[in-house]
Length: 367
Image (tube, rainbow, N blue to C red; front, side):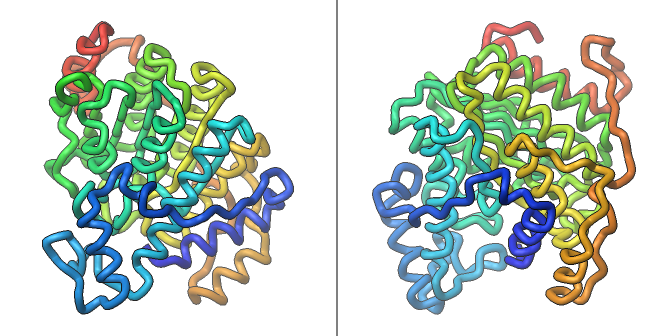
């Protein structure tokens, strides 16, 4: 979570001239009432206390742990990230922009009463809750981070207004050990949570096949008024904290698919795109999220583009690492559509079928 990954992403956005295609805005940090749309009052109070004095961090709230160490200014930094995602959601809902990107956001593990998995405040959940507060009746959240979007799922577990879809590495092999197909929501929200856990080692063809076998049909049926997506870059084969084998080119293909889904199935094309995980902070994250910005701005970066020399110099100055040379991993991803047939011996197909059988009938769809 080294902040250099954010600085390098913004540097690459600038190097490609994408600032001319977007409206770069700041936003206020999320205030108490906004944070409490998702988080408990006692938890926010504990974060404030640890922020003022890291020695006061209460591990009962997940603070001061290995994953979520307390640091001075923790509340302010985390509330600002949440405020940026809320600002993006508000701008899209009000029609100020069809699309908005906050690549500093996507901190999807934080729970109502605890920090978790590098996440203090759950900005995706807060942004969705703010959309509901503003009058949205149907919001879809699609999470393609390698880790399960457990905190967002928990926030809307019983809320039929929100559809949460998470495609992630299988919980048998990765934190947070949740996100099984059988997790489908409860009460009035039953069928509102969809989980697609994929086996370790899944590559481009399987990852894209799984996405297209589940997500488009759900979005077309739900007809959300806003689509919120989380694009953690940690699905990449070079990421040190996970075990999928996805390329930058496949990540870009899913970004394009989310963009297309917004224009096809969401009134006004309302789309809020967030960052998330990603720990190959030089080779992967900046390139992945620069593609996201370009796609959202309707000014996509050609994957074959040479990375500007000015940015490569910035990378070396900041990290003493050599930067990648192009905006591609040199692959052209392809996949077999689900409609082409099911292979019972294929582990990805087994995962897709388990998800469809668990969730689709609850939504009145054929498994």
